[in-house]
Image (tube, rainbow, N blue to C red; front, side, top):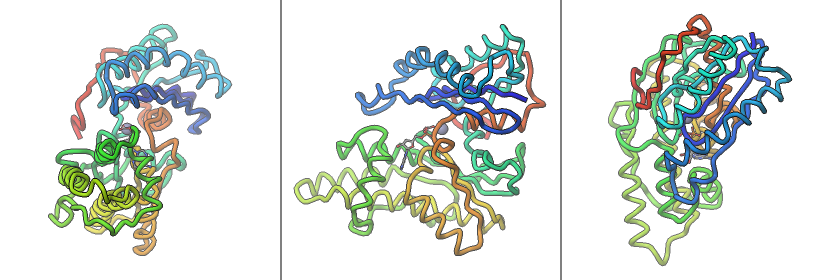
Length: 329
Ligand code: KG4
Ligand code: ZN
């Protein structure tokens, strides 16, 4: 089976080809234009997707050495995300389906992140605990199979990536903020400032990062002349990572799960990876951190989940986009 997958939920245009279960291309084009505005501008995002979609799909097919007529299954993200962005990808997929008679599987973006730890080896064991941390979502899932999972907790305010992005903005660094903070934190002292760890000991699997954001804001106001940028980055990053790791481990312990996966843009964070790895090693838990191209928004994860659910593929194109976060999860 040859699958062509399309992902346009936010600010990355991506297309991927999966051939007999193996990813043979995964092209990701990021939109730099939002850097100018310090955050994603939805209208600009849809316009950039419109420019990029046809060349990116063509590039994914070319790299896979296939033509559109070789494709047996289409997969496309239909939510959650920005409505205008989602429409570009879904309408493009529907156009291909109509023209070439290829069935489509609409894929839920967060579900695709949940399973991206299985992309390199679909036979990895279940159950697992999956931590999905991106610019729009922060949730912990108990995953029992490719069709059975449960949300254990989610953020009550900002997503972890949003916290990185907003703190980066306050520090005058660029967007997206995570990579800047990650880099600057390497030369900082993570114990220099005791930033709050929201909900860390409340017994739930929910998160809250708004207190941290406010705390950084007042710290910068009160220490404008003396503050050390690297220490602020390292301390804020440690506060985020501490909560993410402790809640994920608590979930694994409560549900007696021996596999932890992470996904979403923030899972590229170097401190999150090393801290989670060390904690898992100590407890005999297998830790799966997908490679960077599967952590960010990418079409390979969309195609991968479509392969697991190929029995739901249809020529019925009445599906719509659903921008709402975690709609039925
Ligand atoms: O999954 P993603 O590419 O897009 C969404 O669906 O949101 O995640 C983007 C988020 C941004 O907030 C960005 O700041 C964050 O991932 N991010 C990181 C790192 N790389 C990207 N956060 C922390 N450390 C990183 N190295
Ligand atoms: Zn995402």
